[in-house]
Image (cartoon, rainbow, N blue to C red; front, top):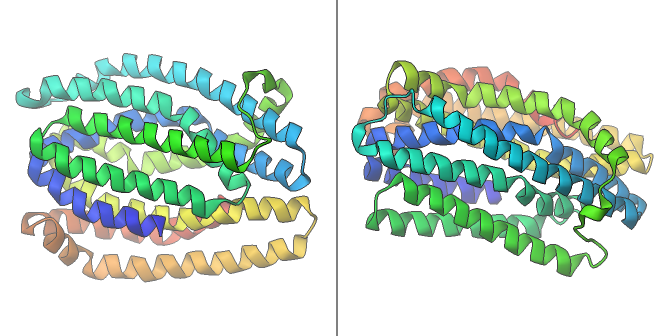
Amino acid sequence: MLTLVTIAATYVLTPFVIHTLGPEGYGTWTLITSMTGYIGLLALGVPMASVRYLAQHVAEGDRRKVNEVIGSCAGLYLMIGVAAAAIGAASMALFGIYEIPLSLRGAAHLAFGLMVLQVSAGFIGLLPEGIMFAHHDFVVRNLVRISGILLRLSLTMSLLKLDASLVILALIQIACLGFDFGVSWLLVRRRYPGVRLSLADFDGGMLRRIFAFSLYVLLLNTGARLSFETDALVIGAFMGVGSIAFYAVANSLVVYLMDFIGSIAAVVSPMATRLNTEGKIADLQVIFLKWSKAALSLTIMAGLFLIVLGPRFIGWWIGPSFERPAGEVLQLLMVSSLVFLPVRGVAVPC
């Protein structure tokens, strides 16, 4: 349901933002989110590692170890956030080499700085989600995220009509991050009384365990980032920011299909950890086999639709001028994803 609401919001927002900001404005925004998104790699796979160890200690009923994981992750996220802010400030120089239209240049640089702030603060914002996933509280967590999506939808539709600015878009992202973290942490405090967030629980041994597990996840995240975010940087450098919009529209459909597969994988991961902790290997094998079939079937069904009818859908969705250039990009991306998506969907949680 979360993925469907996200897709529905994207269906409404994408043409609205493109027509409000224009192709060059939307391309510049995509360039900003792509560049600042790379800073997110500093998370080093810690979010998934935290879920893995939190789920293990929750299954064992060891509240002290649970708080050690939370304290260690919180300390690490704060350090990563400071590093991210420094790297983001340095990357402003790299952003300056792109030929941003003069009418957008001032707002683009300010929006870039705000998005660096949002990404840096976003690391600690991952902590409540890990706690809720470890307790198998997926429905409550996703209700919060759905509320955040609806908030972003309403703010974007209303505020961009008043001021069609990149800065407004960046401020909306910061507001939604604050809403998500505040509501999620309030729910954590109420639903799990023994859980606390304290840097006094920071443990070096736990930190080493998190790093050992997170290296594999980091490689996966880096590969995904290179596959789906780098193109905007290359297109902007060689073809201009206006051309990014055609690629971004096609790429968004593939990314949301990947998120759909990943949203189910996010449920499978703590379940697999619990079964492994309890020694139920036979049940773990059953989940692995069933999820492999499900991931492959979902990818084939959605992939064939996008390959055959995707270009026509884009032309109807965004506009006739997008049907051919964005449609051809979508077909190429989807062919390569027929193998990538099911493999990634199964490998990440297991």
